[in-house]
Image (cartoon, rainbow, N blue to C red; front, side):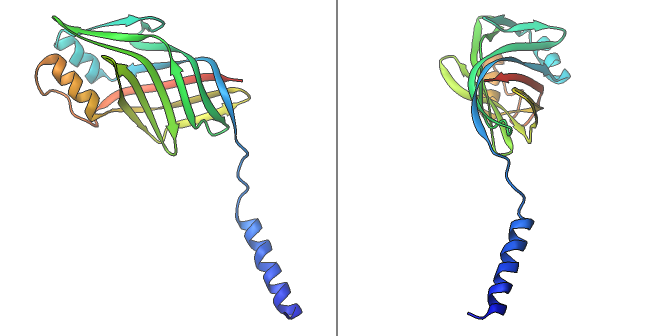
Amino acid sequence: MSKRLVWGLATVLCALVVAVPAQAKTKTERVVGGHATVTPSKEITAFLLSRGITVTPIGGMKAGNGSLTMPMVGGQMQVPTMQGTMNASGGLQYTNGSKKVVVKDYRLSHTGHTGKLTAVVNGHRIVLATMSSPKTHMSGHTGTMSGSLKLTAAWAHLINHLVGMQVVHPGEDLGELSATVKMK
């Protein structure tokens, strides 16, 4: 191999190293605290009121000032990307006359460019909502994630069953989610 070819290959390799940005090192940490707040859209709030559906917090879930707040109690996240899962305690009971739907054990997951909010609904875990390209930020051992929640087909089906007619559709705006978690 000639010196010229060796230098040419070395130059190309150096250019590749400079052109490819260094990936931030990630490490997995446990979620040890924090909270997530969901602010329902005006349409969802109006829908619940107009249909006579009552929403009752259960366990650690709190309602107030037009929002629902749940404590984050576990999970694992990658730092600094916030990829992983956050588990919440508490839940909600939706009641319409004699029909009840209990939603508990909420879990917020973030993989790739998508967030998912799942929960156990009447004994089965389903995806309630998705978040497209959630915004994340890390500072030390505290991370925040926020984004718009869009209704899934599974949750739309259960809501429609609760009211006894087709009234909501997948992809509708559920509101905004904002989570702050502490990791260790």
